[in-house]
Image 1: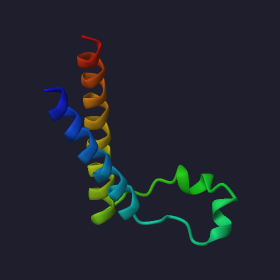
Image 2: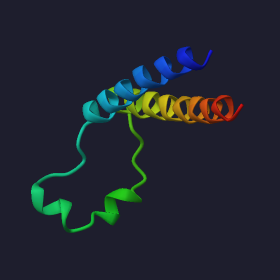
Image 3: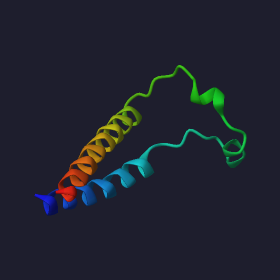
Length: 78
């Protein structure tokens, strides 16, 4: 069981990296990376289409990764 969960976690880690890299950038130029962009962070625009799907998929994979990490920690302590 431990090896199966470990394999799933490794695959999920790679998928999370890919999902994060596929998300569209919200920055207009390189200078906005240093200026903060708090106005965009708290904006009231909702993600739609591909952006919404990627956001939801990344969240689900992140939560699943955390659950598997806790399960692996529990199994390794026994």
